[in-house]
Image (tube, rainbow over all chains, first blue to last red; front, side):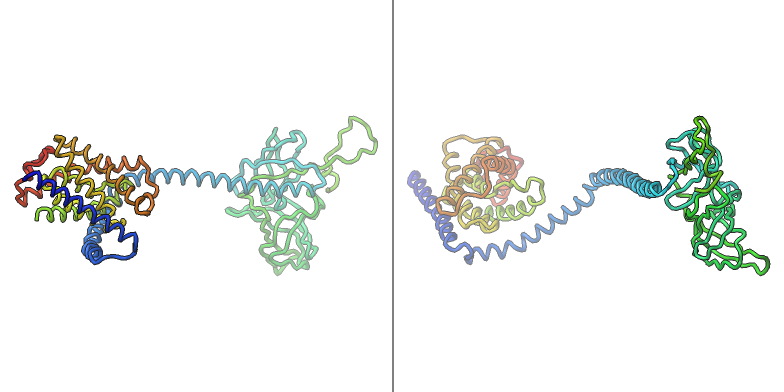
Length: 296
Length: 176
């Protein structure tokens, strides 16, 4: 009796297995169709699933926001370090780009110079307003560079060599009170002598002996005249910043802003004048520097 | 009545585990609760095979509906696993949680085979992108979850005062 019951049970179980097969077959005929039982199960399950999902995601969110923050802090530290390193590299690259641009401009200037040029790098500057001197290190031409030679940059006239010692030289800037350069305002043709003002906190010059009839206005370009000094003609010196027309006297006082930002000066060129042709052609005779005889 | 309660418990477990598993790192490999239910009904609960199979098919059908599987595929696999487990339980003495877990792992592989066969046989195509390695990992995951689920089932059985529950397979009873 018990064995028959068991066999009957197994027969029922096998018969029950036909039910899923029938369901599968029905599903394959119409996969999109849902039976009433399907809908009922889904309708009951949907709020339950939404509730579970809400709870689980809430717990997960708390976990992600607070518990995983340990790793986030470590990651932040690594990112900060990487950021700092990349910023430094960017700054270095930016400086190289600026240097390259300056060198390219200097190269352009060199091609337009009759005189031979010696490149130099600015290594120090005087902070005193009374002594506007910049120290440069010559790239080459030790022995070629002598006091009085003109120093220029791509933006214009820098000054002249003051002292030379080995590979180094001091440059007397145009803004130094001792500097004295014969200049010209091309628009009016007026001439004067440019000297440094030696002001604290500013690189400025003034033109003395500029006649009143030369109607100079702010913004006028000032260039070297090429007369009476060692400087070649036509080098840009700066622009007129202001004009003080005194009611008495023959001359007006003009303040000039140099075309060069001396604080940012990094590379310059020293103009080495070519020796004049020796009429005697005698060997062993040293030629005097050309700029002491005539301007370039 | 007890079968119905067990089906309800497995239904809630299906919803909860499915919701929970999505957030876990191993979300790609999930345990098959329908198989665990089938093993429980066929091996642990010691009920008549017809009632156990009905319960397993019901849980499998719910899994089909909840997971969007072709209706009947998990149900068929769960039914087959339940009957096989019942036959195994009649002939081999299975005791302890390790044996129960191993049987569940084997049942999970069997269920996967049944699903693949059913899909192939009904021209629904094989399971996409599922390799044998993935099947084995899924089986291991199912086996790992089986023991706590079995204990929960035994606990529910005891609460609903099913006298045969105590006569079931000993899986390292934790006071159920």
